[in-house]
Length: 592
Image (cartoon, rainbow, N blue to C red; front, side, top):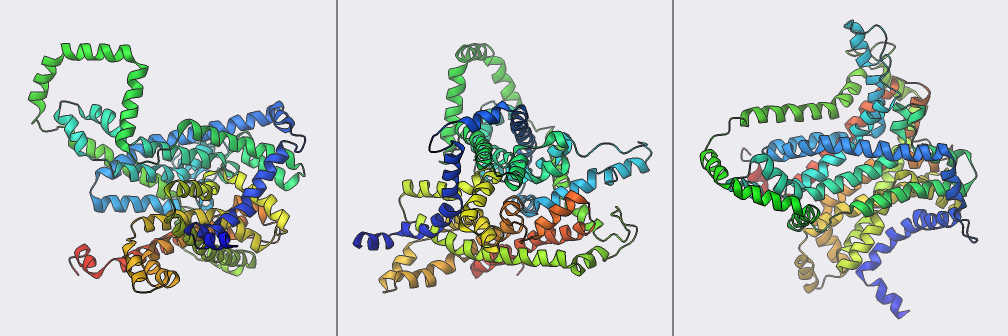
């Protein structure tokens, strides 16, 4: 009893509520599913052998990996130069561009998928434009193929590639590149030998994040792809809803999880933030692989040293002739990327005001008929109200539990903190279909399938991770001496937290609650598995209509969902502005 009392007074005890939710909803079910896939207690790999013996299963698995790899590669090819150009501009313009990247990141993925259906459909914007110009006589097959799947997936995942790259590139000291150029290195050589190795942590983080999420993609391939473009998550979801063979479903889910784990172990993630060590490892590994090439390179470098020294002396103070041209090309590239990210959403908003019987761009007349359909149809506004209720409860519960966990983790040892953080973040680093399957079987045991309580618990599994990340980042900059000062004035731990700590971390707490709400509001895959037939959220209603017919009312709903992240950004900005001291506000706004 005394040891339990001591544990209750330890900071690590604050992580118990978060760990209990994860353990009950996901942790124990995953362990039981793994044992089921091995036919416990006899333990055999018959289910895995059966999976690979069926050519269709192996084809879908390979197709899932292939689509995920190609989508990740495209995101990297587009995202890396975009992040590099964003970091290179002025601070004010950089903030504006990052906001433009964040807006589609926070927008519902279902809305963005719907936008591409409107753009690429047989009677979509692109085909109608080509038909009106007389360039084609019949609509082109732009949708229900692999290309459409890549377009939709890259559009959704590109912000997740750009943001980690920007966060790493901002911290790279540009004077290192200038130093390399002052020693005779050309701009491309300085970038390749100095900047790129230092940006590898962002490349790895972005690629792993995009690849793992792509493995669990369900909505976009099903909506934009054909029958030959289905991914393993689609098969798993259909088997959960139609089959009672738990062992088969478990084996499929763990095969998909194994792919993500293997890639994670092969690539690895550098969490140390030591960029110099990364560059040193890269240079050493390349020298170890190519020793003979390095020797030849040094030899020819010594032979060409006089000519290189002469060229360096003549070009050292020479003005760059290609600077204006490179800036123009970079500006055009960033504008095209922003157009690709934002135009589908703008298109949905404009077409939602169409006055015709079908969606058209530009609208022949302006009308609010599709908004009236939304607010006049009980199936729509009741689904919206259910989603808001669930999102509010998830935001409240995740904020309380996640803040306690982040506060407790910030006061534990680094090793324990790293281990527990990894455990709490596991649900948002796994393919979402695996988390959905585990939550389904976990809530079945609790008798909560088809209830709002079950949906709330399933959503909290991921939302708690977002709250922990954001609040932990806020606590990292918190001065603990303020708490010590309060304690020295006889304030108890609870009063110190409520009167000192909580007001100072309030911006992070509000940001965590906003992200938890958005995560719950946009959730489709997990909700489709655990909601049964009695709980219908707005994303589920939209998904059902997309599968049966392209209802123009979805454009009105989509435009409202596009305004939601804008409202959340305004809330976050106001929260941040109010947290800034008045003296700093004057410095930030000299005109005031």
